[in-house]
Each structure stands twice: as structure tokens, then as C-alpha cells.
Length: 228
Image (cartoon, rainbow, N blue to C red; front, side, top):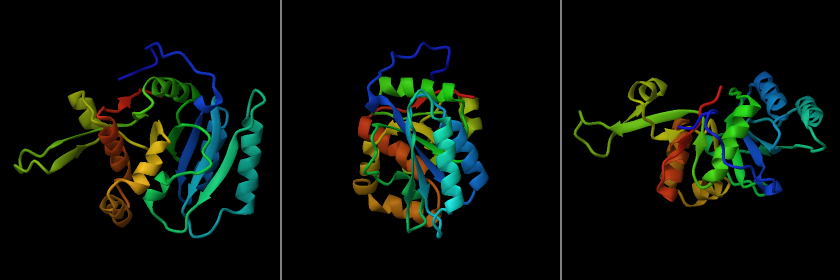
């Protein structure tokens, strides 16, 4: 567990060492506007990609407003890029589709209803740079074997209070986490299709799938960072 009292690793100034936000949204335009307005001012943000899976495309009014907000909030002579990634199918797997024009290695995956201060996001990014193959996130969860069933293939999922009570965690959720862009490709093309089918059918668990995918690829646990 890292927190803001822990000295972060040194910062890197290379442009590819900035990060991109990939934000999942669904018919919550006020929340989307609020989140974009907030995160556009974060110092090392390079671009924002909005994962859009609604049946109708974003309205001209919404597009105009968000582009104006991003431009007005960009600081120090930089201009944060804003793009809508339009999907025909409504599936939570869309949030992990490969993005061809992603210019940064670092991705900050976030839901439209979750806001952390830029200082917390920047700190988590520093931590991620020290371990760029793993996931670094703000929302920890835990799982353990279901001993009552006596089945080594069945596990129990524990929420925040399980983490608080046991003092342990085994994953961080992608609703607020950094990871390398290469995992988009692995999730879509290499992860067993049965997992993606489960996610689409049940409209759930894509965050668990991504956390386990990264853990399997690295053989290492995620890093939980405390943020406000």
C-alpha cells in the first residue's frame, strides 16, 4: 500500500511518459461533463478517450461543450486531446478495446462517476512508473477460496469492508486504475473468449478479468494507492 506520505519515484519528463484517460460512460451526461472538466486540468494528462456504447452518437451540443472545457482547462501551453471511441455493441468489454491512436503507454482507466484530486492521480502515476507492467489503483478488493464448499475452484469476492477488516487485498478495480496500454490488446485478442462472453452476458466482472489478466501476465500483485 502506497500513500501520499511515501516519497514517490522520480518523475520522467518524456512525452510518452504522460498518461491518457480512458473513461467509461453511459447516459450520465452531467457526470461526464463534471469529470472531464476536473481531469482536464491534471498536469501530465495527454488525452481523454471516452468509451461510448450508447445506441445514438454523442450530440453536437455535448461534443462542443466538452471540447470547449478541455481547451479551457489545458495548462502550460499544452492541449489535451479529446476523442469519443464509438462502439456499435453495448458491452463492458468495450472499455478495454485496443485504441490505435493512443500516444501514451500509461492508461488511467476511470468511470465517469469517480473523481480523485489531480494530486492523487499524479501520485498514482508516479507509482505506476516505478512498476509499469502492473496495475496501480485506488479501489482494492479481495478474493479467497470458499472453504465451506470444499471446492478449490470456487472463490468468494470481498468488497471494501473485507479489505478493511482483513488488512489484505488481491486486486484493484479498473474503475480507477493505471495500467499499460498493451493489456488492451491482450484482453481483446489473447484472453479466453469465454471470459469476454461472460462479461457481455452478465454486464459485470470486466474489472476482475482485467486485474487477473495483469496478475497472470506479470506474476505480480497490483499496487493499491490511497487517494481522496
